[in-house]
Picture 1 (cartoon, rainbow, N blue to C red):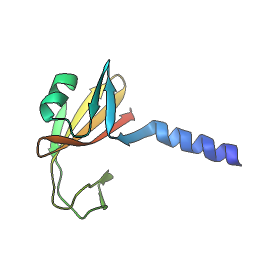
Picture 2 (picture 1 turned 30 degrees about the vertical axis):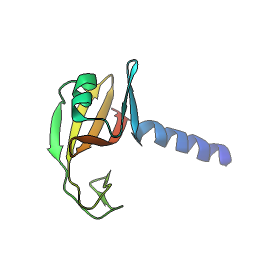
Picture 3 (picture 1 turned 90 degrees about the horizontal axis):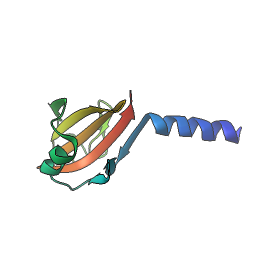
Length: 101
């Protein structure tokens, strides 16, 4: 029974991970980095979308909102069988999500 739970948790964690860091080759993108650093490491995004602000801790469209007074942009990248979404607020990275296609 415990093994099934561990396997299920492992599979879920492999599908999508929100993090404050992302390895890009030998470099690391970190929450707090500038949007210029994102472009330097990942290039031009496949798409950009604006994120609406909401209450702290709430979820909107499956995205965790970090601060009720901040909106921001989500930059999407397709790379090596993954979709990476970098959330940028006031020119700084606030969240990085990486998931397999």
